[in-house]
Picture 1: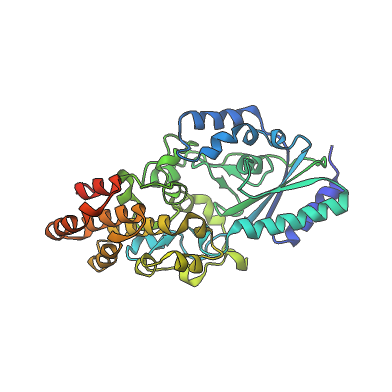
Picture 2: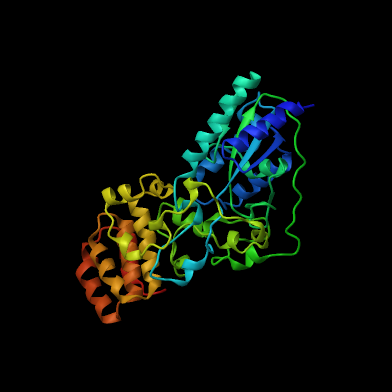
Length: 374
């Protein structure tokens, strides 16, 4: 049924609060969405993200999480980059950080705006509300598609006709009955650029992602040692990967964000690997205090930096890797060994192995010393 005056007011208020896209969907998802999630989990393509499996029932249907929900107000915030997203991949001495993580943590920034909109809706219409931004068991992308904000492309991410690949998503669920917008149609056509560009072949088929092979998963979500088969392909990507997003032809309509919270910090635009590899825990927390990078912790981040150092082929960086052979973290030590296996001459590497390997109690570090495979 809906209420056009209420819907128009909500759109206007959302735009006034700094959102760039607004759409409304019914607070439900068709059964095939849950079935698709179930198949993804059954194939084990979620890797070590066990929370996806434990919350699957609630994730498959918003009303399973909140039975009173009737409508989903879907919001988008543009974070489009001003410079080419992949330009740093040609600079192996630099650390390539995913565009979304080059400034403030979007979770906190967008949640603040969502709460402001939700408070306004509750006061204006006397409705109940709940807000979500990528941290609760809610499938924002299918809801955003049904709200007309875009469509899930072959890389499984949302694509917008107005903003290309660069939209943060948020949601206000409400018990207010609102008229849903028309869903967005799929406009990928025969294009497969996003699938072809993936450095680790993370797409078994169009519209399917095997997270275990995805560089964003490997550098952010994966807590253990990065499998050897993917390290060279990671290149200098130290936090996330934008390749499949950046090559989408719909980005010709994208625009650089004007939102100060998402304009890249200078030190995260073209950072040098050498500036990050020496970070201890205190230094890491200081540098990334308000950044999404902070959540992976110092050890995982330095692990990623060392993989990039191993791919740099820069012997100057080998000295930094050597210094970390005695690091307290086995993640860091193993990554340092691998980097040195790529940067040091065989004689020097053998000497380092003789000096350090007997001290190592961690089996994975021993395996790294024993192997010169790349």
